[in-house]
Length: 127
Length: 286
Length: 214
Image (cartoon, rainbow over all chains, first blue to last red; front, side, top):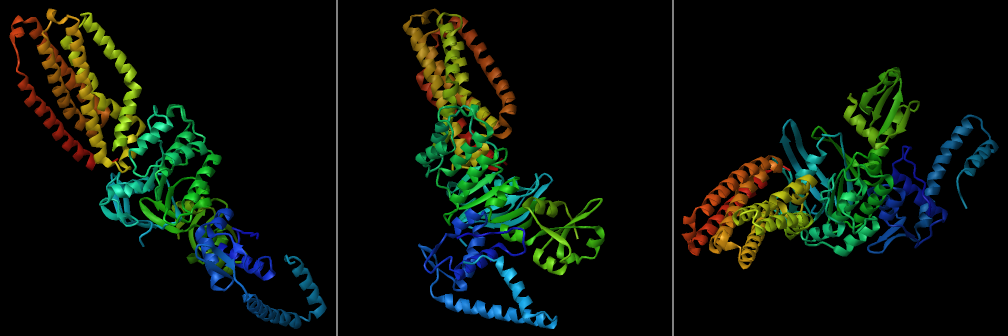
């Protein structure tokens, strides 16, 4: 599991971690039952505060992505993947609706839009 | 909360200097960095914690132990490394170990020996022959070797080369893996504090002017570089301090995200701890 | 607190060679009659009686006291250890004096100068005086530091030693004193005074250290 943390952006670091781990889970880089590094190990590795990693893990647990087993560590939560994907799908559809509206009002064709989409998607890592 | 170091309303004045009503908590499992200019009160605060100076008012406790009522038990818990190595020139490290064994109930000689080896300190040479770095490593080795729960380091890493400092910072990180342990680290080397601290507290002229989570502070605050004209039209409530030079202005932005949304055309850069401190201390408050 | 005593011993160990050499020189000189035995007794007492202050000087150079007060020994421990070490120093002086006096008497040198009884009596009086010497100087050194304390020490030591030596020289020359046979029981109240002075002094020093800002 690799994380790319930027200190120069706007996004708080714990949010970056949360998003990236969610991304890894949704993309299958992390599977159900995989053990995550401890909060302290991660903090030390990324050279950030343990408070930040703790917050990130707490958010991930709250959103159902991971489970904490006291004494054992944090594990990727099972079975929620379907529901989470559905959630992400719905969010995407909503955002796409706005994009489609913009395209239609400016007379941009579906082909042009698809081209743009391909270009943009090409820059995102996927398996 | 019983775990951690708690300072409540600590005040101390001597001469023209006053440490004014400082309340601070250092939670267990964390490292707090104490920053500020020379004479801001960092050493005074640390000395108050150790009862080297008597505060006029205030209460200092660690895990429920009072620094004055339970002085001995309190001090058993604390590993101290001050800015100068206190051991006499004529001692060798093993002799230091034997003296310390008679001072702390929980002294762990094998552990001390381990640190001596790890830090590369010779057993049979007198401290007289040690470099400053070696002396400080010895101080820190001794501070760590009696199973303390609280580490107080007052400029203990200044004058050390980056490699040694990294070794020591790694030791501190290992130390706080135990949630019952806490560290208060005062230093001018803000890059070190950026690496390991969970919280930052800034003292200025005896007042606590800043206390927050390090990551939040560094992602939240930002540095605005702009011209005077641009500065004039910015909403001043979004800024904290300004430093104007002849050709440009620098300002401390309180919340980068909010500011960038309001003024996307202006450049806000990430800020280092040192820059943050300079702004808070030297910037003109708006 | 035992760690503090250990520290005192380590410092003493490092200077003990010098002390031994100085002491042996005086001892030999006395044996070969360059010095009067009484003079030797006084010197030995001051040499070893000064030990806690010598170590205090070392402490100041290393800024040790500040650190020691931050350990569980606390300020009270610092004072206790220093006084205890001081008493041990005086006992060492006493042992040294008794040793030399015995050696001299065995070597048959004493009849020519001073009777054994008087010298033994003198050794114990010097022990008491050393306790008083420490009782006076330790609080001054705790309060003002060893640099300023040195001035007080020189004044007291020079004055005290000078007076004692003067009295003794007169006594040694004066034949009448040979018939002076002091009762050993006189030593008991003297020792008591010495220890009481030291206890009072320790109380004062504890008070000083308790209030001191380090």
